Image: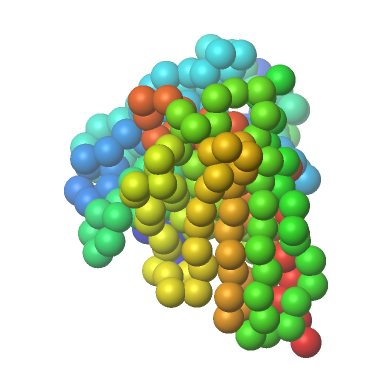
Length: 111
Length: 119
């Protein structure tokens, strides 16, 4: 069971908007920045959002991130079929030992 | 071009050992902290280990502590993961990933190398 909780799947139609939640605690999200990663089928993960809400160069502004308390959210607008992928949140955790942690991942289906 | 290339994966029996390597190019390797992240077949991402740029700070996931050792050679632009006492549950694709400068988000990932632990 993952330290960070994400919904297993979300779906929406092309052109629509979707949000993916990531729930944690004060030992992780509550006191650390959150990252979001996109993993297309058969490929390595790719950084989408860093430090809660910043986009690396080359990531379109259709992708956004936010954080409030011990939860974070990834938003994707103007959905495209190419956005079908697994999405993971990640951060540091210091509950028992210092470690990085990921959410269980959310499979996005663009109907 | 910024690039990370893993190697060293393969088939190993339970209890065996394997050493993974990650060759970095296109950036000043010695300035960046690095990580190993793995993904078991059909499963999500699991962080394995972290090493700071100077090797002064190292962290491990509880699942590998005492069995795996992370190291780096900045002169060779290389990251390593020595894996001992391997178990079936260590079967996964292993990725090396670079932390952003001034941050701890992983912005560059290799293509991964597959480790299969089976008798």
